[in-house]
Image (tube, rainbow, N blue to C red):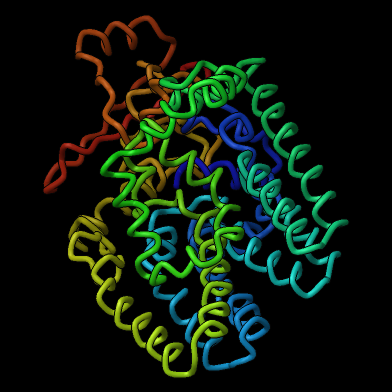
Length: 435
């Protein structure tokens, strides 16, 4: 949350978008050009709640193209309403919204709208949607290429050819931009796939020459559970439209081949590009089911759809007892923390631990403790990537910190929160001695 909030705040104030929380320029981490379009909203509401509100509204609006596509395909408003409701209670979509803010979540309604405009033949609006989708993350280009291939299958020849070309160009530009802002080095996100190669060329070669090995690596229990979590709420209807489901293959492969276990669950934002594709596939599958059967079998399918979604409500963050959607500390401790934060000068450089850093990032210099004294989690390196993904990082010893502090030209004020149940949280305020 702090990474994107500081980045948008810097853009809105005309500062270079160097995110000190992450230790790199904003576009060196992800190709999130869409954040530049959102930055003017901070002139109206200067708060991270702006990003959370935009994300919630955007995901909710995805129900509109789902309703429109279903009505277009089936001709029945009741079916359309049913699919829209299923989308709004879809566990993966709700978890995407619950897990902080990520720019690619804005691609969910855009891809749904792109499918609608593809089916309705409104090419200008279609290309606008895929352009905005390309602005959300560097991997969006792969999805756009697959969407172009699908457009060819449905005989939208011009749209298909242009989409494939645009997707390839978007992917190339995005990866080149990230490399440029990383001083010629590729993103450390490649390290999540180090088991398959050191770069895209070696990975592609391994996929071509060792397909059986790749398929065997996909045959893991967590991947099977992941697919069930995605497909069961849709009664496996996407399997009746494999040509549509295939559009999600790059995003699914990226998650299922990753070395990070969080990417093969629905509890994070990694399904943002997968959810819209599976829903369109489910709609096409429902259309085919209605054609192959009769009114009774179609009614039975809709009844089964609702019953399964009721049973999977426990997967949702709204009903899951393990979901923490309430503040983890008491109101009294919250007031104490807010009072202390308000005492910090807005121009001060601050280093804070994870629960506090996102409350202090509307400034040009804010660091994730123990940076800047122990920058193992700073910049374009594997340790920094692990820290930003929420993994544990080695904390410096007292001797190492004292050595760093004594060798630096800083005046240090260590502020501990006493009389609090979370006194292990602390902040270091760093004031340059020359100022």
